[in-house]
Image (cartoon, rainbow, N blue to C red):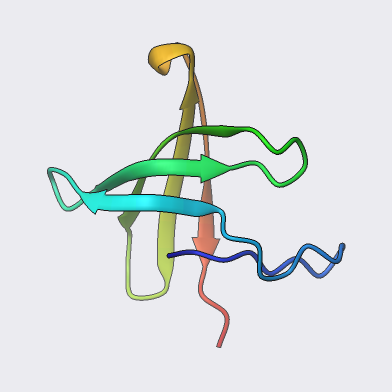
Length: 74
């Protein structure tokens, strides 16, 4: 579920979305890997269109969160 493609490094194919399961409000919950640090964080993902995925990761029980919008490659 979710593998990286990074044109700037050689970290292509590393699994970054881990154990994602359906939760509520058309979101999925699981873990996300930061390939730069090797750390994993609680995460939610949600489709925001046919080719757009909103990804959010949180640390310390949700005290610190950040997110990105990912776009599908054709």
